[in-house]
Length: 384
Image 1: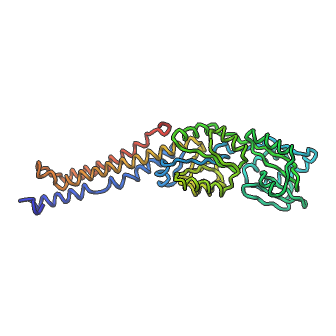
Image 2: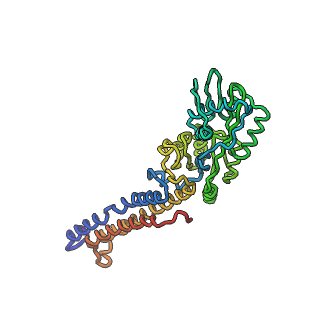
Image 3: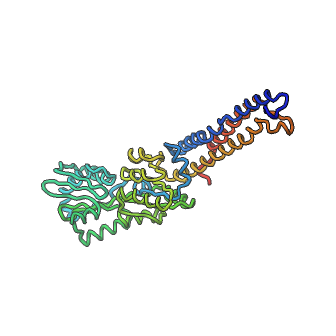
């Protein structure tokens, strides 16, 4: 302006400088991301999805592999004893109090189901001499110098407890009915077989189908046996699953998928899922699960409804789209506005932008970004 502005170069140059400073104020750019994130988090809460941080919301739309825990995630998480079969019915009265005492000390959901079942029969427990919990396998106890074991067949094999042909046949029959089987042994002999059923949630199959329709691979991981896992996976419509997985194994499986270049979401509800939740790119806890799982996870489904997972992924996609739209319009505004404010049109038609108009335009750009972000509030997450 001083070189080429002519008679009123300094005045017009100063005016242009003030206008550029006003119109270049980066309010719109600064508001582009946080406003979209704030509205997205609020929209999630409306749909029973609690989102802890912006990172998970911005990343979720890229998820192409979802891992589901079985108990409490795909199933209701309210296991109940369906069968309690003693090998020697005559010893039932002596063994039930011992079984109750052992299961009372265990923190596993299946143990709670056995405890409820026996307490309903008004069985009274006794005082154990020793108790030990073995993660992912079962428990052991000592009572009156006798060793007792409750757990899966892996634990029994480690303890050298052999299953008879009749017991094996009974276990297989129960497992084929999608029941989890726990074996109760005294010393080296099996004394009872306990079958526990946990039905699939009414909405699980629909949610899994919706995820698969979006091109997302769905996996199921469980510490349960192969036959029960296969029956549940078949009922839920999941082709890829792993059974008899320990907590560390779940985290390793997440890591394996990540090494294959997948963006992995882990969905779980228990303490044994916390390691895998921490490893996953996007971690989702069920609202009715353990406090540790909810503390580790970046998202929590308040209603424990799996249909909220496709909604969360759609919300993430729309939030990121809104952020990009906001940044585009804010950038375009500055790209066009600053040269005009500097006076690029003055040699052509004598137009020089007034600082007051620049202030109004700057405010309008911020309002447009906020308005675009608020459109998220009226979007339907149950629609494509």
